[in-house]
Every structure is written in C-alpha cells, then in structure tokens.
Image (cartoon, rainbow, N blue to C red; front, side, top):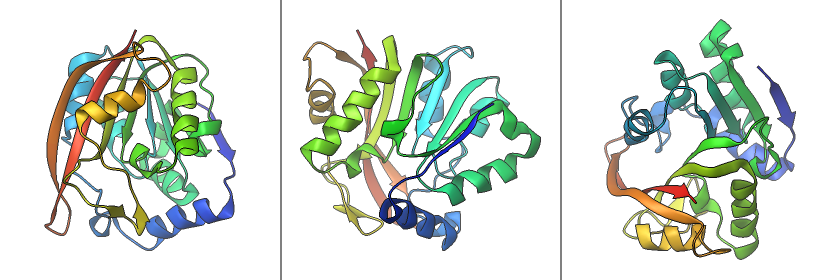
Length: 215
C-alpha cells in the first residue's frame, strides 16, 4: 500500500519526533494495552471490509491488532516520521498491508471515503478556532455519510497539558457540539464513556470517549 511523506513545519514535526525518539512506550503517558476501548468498539461496530483511519497513530498497536483480526482497509496517519518508520519496521512484511502517511492530517486525502475515523488524543490539541475548523473540515471531507468518528480527548477532569502542550478538555456533550459546529444535524451520538486511563508509570488520566455517526 501507499507510503506518503508530506513534510510538516519543522517545529511540529520535531516536537513529536523528539517525544518518540527520546522515549520508549513505557515513558509515554498515552501508551495503553492492546485490548483498548477503541478496539472493542470498532470490532463490535464495523465490518472487516471497512475503511479505517487512525490519526495521530504514533506507535499504537490498534491498527496492527485490527489487521491481525481481519481488517484490511487501514491507514496510519502520524506527524512523527520516527514513530511511523518504527512501526513499519516492527511489522515487517505486514506493513505493506497498511497505508502510511507522515504529515499533517489536514493535508491527508484518502483514496476512498472513510468508514471510521479514529482519534485518540489529537483533537484536544486543537486549542484555537482556526485549528478546530481545519480539523473538522478535513474530517467532513474524508468521512462518508453514514460513517463514524471514534474520538477520545481528555475529560473535563483530565490533565490540562500533555507532552508540554496545552489541551482542550471535553465531556460528551461539548464534543458533540464541536463536531456539529458547521451543521447541528451532521453527527449523532452512538456511544460515549468516561475512561480512566492508567499510564505506564501508574498515574491515571480521565478520557472522554465519543462514538458518533454522520447522517
């Protein structure tokens, strides 16, 4: 499958490259076990023929795990070239079964409309209206009518920063309002949950998960 590199401005690229180059997974607060809430919801919801993109995928094992249980139309979108290349090396020959894009997710264009857009801990870094609008524009351009978004951000009671950067915090209602900023009838809630994520070093972070369907 395709491997595309769309270079980011150096400050963004270097920040996330630095995080992955200088830390193993047990030194990154967002690392989680393979049996994640995202995996459970995706495998229960969409058929194995679905087109799924994981934005800000980093070194997450979500896509490799989905591949191992029969999903084929998978795309890994990541700012950090280091994280993307490390995952490709780890998967070896299997990496050819995943589409890879290094660069700004707002510049990514799928070959076919997306059935499910997965984002764990990217949207909450969009802290100004222009960034939010650009994210939503990309989302609406890529996800088909009837498709889904599975979105996880820090909850209102979660951390105020991650990796040294400020974040926006949400509950399920404010997430849904944000998704429907352009059109109040575009997205409908399918499921939501507050998730206490235990970091590799024993602390807990409260996440808000939202699964929504596009009309």
